Amino acid sequence: MFSIVSFPELASTNDHLKQHNCEYPFSTVILAQHQTKGRGRFERIWQSDQDLTFSILFPHGPNHGFIAPLAVVKALKAHAIPAEIKWPNDVLVHGKKVCGILVESVYEGNDAVADIVGIGVNVTEKKNLRAKSTYVSLSRNELLTDILTRYEELLGLETKDLLNEIRKVFYLNGKTLQIDGIMWDVDGVDEHVYLCIHHQDQ
Ligand code: BTN
Image 1: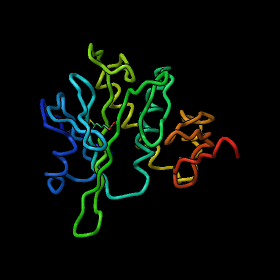
Image 2: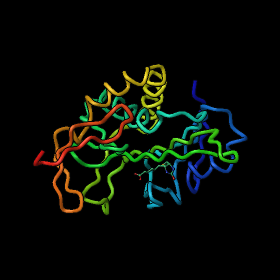
Image 3: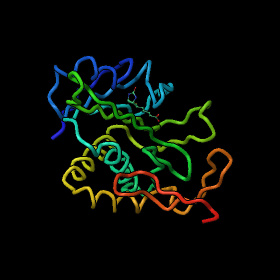
Image 4: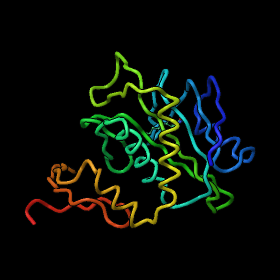
């Protein structure tokens, strides 16, 4: 299903697809051996050296924000790595972030016509890695193949089955969050993958 186009270096695989999406068919995977201006959510910098960084072009659809982390979790679990999803779409191992996902849409006028799903997985140890981040010691090519295989399988599932899969690997299940100084207990995610929380006193 997927066809991979590999570059030794790009500024950002998401930006490349944004600029050139008309030149590629859907299901193209843009893989960069190195990104010089990798981006995260909220325009944060995504630093990667010899890590796994790629973006996939899809027709616009509702579910990529949770299919993508699920595909990564399942790929890591196949290597006996205990990965979990932290809402909305980070992937954690032992509570530390190993993978970030940036889903962006391409618009024609007001209509979203395509989605770009950017995935970055840390596969190298970094001296300056933030304490909240970690890495997995896996081959980039093998991991890419595993993630794409899982992605293809998950695309065939109905939303309710995807939700069941997510709930099984949802890191925040039963945890407590502090929001503006108030403690909230996490119940899980609802059918729209919105976070469900309740006030501790309720
Ligand atoms: C985040 O954690 O905020 C999301 C990080 C997403 C990083 C990936 S790496 C491949 C793709 N290209 C980018 O510039 N960003 C995404």
